[in-house]
Amino acid sequence: MDDEVHLVWLKRDLRLRDHRCFHEVGRRCAMGHKMLAVYVYEPIVYQAPEFDVSHLYFLNECLLELREGLRRLGGELLILRGEVVRVFEQVRRHFGVTHLWAHEENGNATTFDRDLKVAAWAREQGVLFQEFPQNGVIRRLSDRDGWAERWNRRMQQDVMQIPALMHSPEVRHTGDILDAAALGLVDREMVERQVGGEDEAHEVLESFLYHRGTRYRSEMSSPVTAYDACSRLSPYLSFGCISVKEAYRIGRARLSQIKVGEVPLGTVTVWKQSLRSYLSRLRWHCHFMQKMEDQVDIDCVNIARAYDGLRGENQEMLERWAEGRTGYPMVDACMRAVKATGWLNFRMRAMVMSFASYHLWLDWRETGLVLARYFVDYEPGIHWSQVQMQSGTTGINSVRVYSPIKQAVDQDPEGVFIKKWVPELAEVPVAYIAQPELMPAMEQTFSQCLIGEDYPRPIVDHQLAYRDAQRRIRAIRTIPEARVEAQQVYQKHGSRSSRRHKRSS
Ligand SMILES: Cc1cc2nc3c(=O)[nH]c(=O)nc-3n(C[C@H](O)[C@H](O)[C@H](O)COP(=O)(O)OP(=O)(O)OC[C@H]3O[C@@H](n4cnc5c(N)ncnc54)[C@H](O)[C@@H]3O)c2cc1C
Image (tube, rainbow, N blue to C red; front, side, top):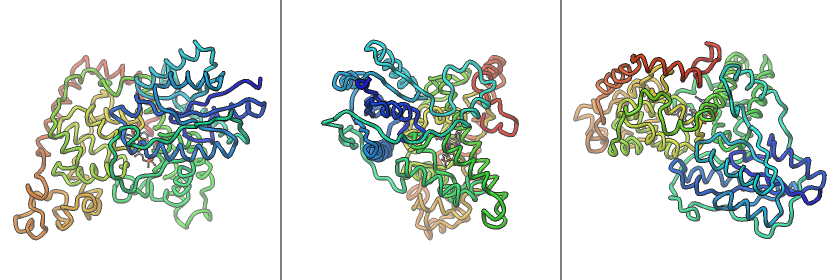
């Protein structure tokens, strides 16, 4: 019995609370077994085109906190680097590992194949490998019917507490947290980036549920207000610093507290609406991840194949879009902001994606990769489903082409966000901030912004590009085979929620 050594393999579950593996292993430590946690910097992950140094910073902050937390309990975290099966074999030989514990990862084909290799290695070596779900995503799901009920049942389960004590074997070299240079990644400056870690996750959630959340519904769409009004929980959920279940349970508990006297006068209704919206988005979180779990290649093929071959490549347009030099101030501000901070609100994510796919007619695989690198909260299942949804290639979602001009007028009427991120436009009068190219020559001189020199002319004509995109997509939508395929896609991926929740499909 005492010889059993349990290895907890950490991937995107970087927390101590509500962690099924630590929970199980903690119980065994109480019976005299030993445990080791391990995180492996895998080349297949950090060299992948979607990986960015911002993900590494966030990850390293989580690892630092987790290592300290485990040590306080008597446990140890190994931080190693290499191909995971090779690393595990070395660890097995050195420590006599008998059990391997992990959470299911709902990733793309690369991580899915690696998980299969680990399972095969464990079988060959007689290591008992146990994997658990850590959210509402269901592995080997046969049908979407009843999915929401199953999700609800998962969310009702108890939150698992941190084990009281752990024991690790003596470890001489625990491995180092590796920086960008050590992993051969290009470093870059960021501002206002969210900091990783479980403590930070709980602080962010608390500030949302007790203070910031009151403005969630009314302020989530504008990038001027959304940085503060949205929960900002996304990177913590993506790296597993907090489980979806715990984020949900804490949110529900707070909702049940909201009554007259508990919150400022006149805010009961807005608080309740905000918290309900937040809670339903946690279901969307898993709903979208389920799509990649059910179809692992949605990061490289159109969900509806009727749209194959639709778009092409244009390196110059891709670069101008990625760097925020399109001549559309709202698009440029968003792209520069998300590159610098690692976060953007939903509506603006949808707008920049829609602009790349419809106005610039760029292939979503390339543009999706740019955004995956920019988003600190990159979550493959949500990301690629949304990328395809905003590009019109799912076959089941209504085609929504955002106007970058209208979004600027509606969401940033004073030009606050635009002027912050596109300083060339700082002196441009508000009347022209959505379309600075309309400024008369004199105005351009006064505002020190010569169009075509200091700030680019619009990369494409909005009206022409918009109409052309609608025509091309509609031409495919009406083909009978495309309609049949759309039915099949709905059967596989469509939300069965009530009409009230239809937006999530
Ligand atoms: C093109 C595109 C790409 C996206 N890529 C990602 C991604 O890689 N990772 C990611 O977490 N979200 C992604 N989203 C969804 C959404 O924009 C973010 O989840 C949200 O903006 C994160 O901010 P928040 O945590 O403050 O969200 P809140 O609005 O406070 O919502 C709370 C949580 O609910 C979930 N959620 C909210 N909106 C959605 C949604 N539309 N779909 C699925 N889950 C949602 C998230 O986990 C979020 O943290 C993408 C959206 C688009 C349009």
